[in-house]
Image (cartoon, rainbow, N blue to C red; front, side, top):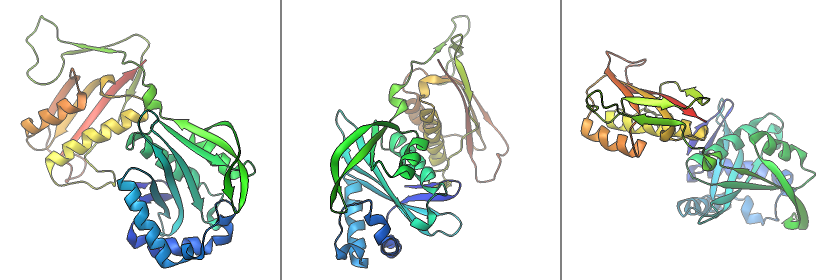
Length: 313
């Protein structure tokens, strides 16, 4: 995972990060110890951090826990870490979030931005329903970070975590995935009997219920989650549809809420491939659509761009 914000980026930890993570932990040893359990001396060695990274990557592959690093965009300096732990699937689909930020970078909005990005990734990509956090009540800065990110307070857990050798109370906060509370689509798709059926996978008419909220999204292109644009046309099509699903999910919507979709391509579409991924995308009755070939898009490497209009009640 790699996500860029306005001031920082968040990335999955890799073995090549061992030196930077070791320095980060050593420089902040006394500062971080006030907020975590006791750690042995081996934790503060290069080898200890490398082993930690290896275990974290194994846990990530097993969907048990996730460790991400926070870096400054302008210098690429590692300034923090953010974790998703205690993963529970089944009927709960939940995890806990925790984080540490270099003491010299506190109070600059970096952690608020990082938490917002990781929460968005956890809901949209990892498909969690609920994310919880526990903060000692006197740690008002951390509580503010979570509240700004959309968490809400739920109560005090008494003496539930041993911090720096002492059992401490924790303010419990939580956030729910709004996409799981998705409202029914206010649109109806149909093909009037007065004209011939559509010549492709689309509907002639999409009717939007009175009072629905209309959302118009900018044309989406085929960059992957790291912002890289593949050269292959098929990959661009697949990435573009995946990006549309993500922006819809951010508004608690799905393909069922699409009113109209406009597709522009600069080269001939492989229709067999497109029909397969398109059917998987809409999962039912296809929305209204306009498709056109154009001489060029905004930059030469773009081969397809798709614009979506959607509505929700």
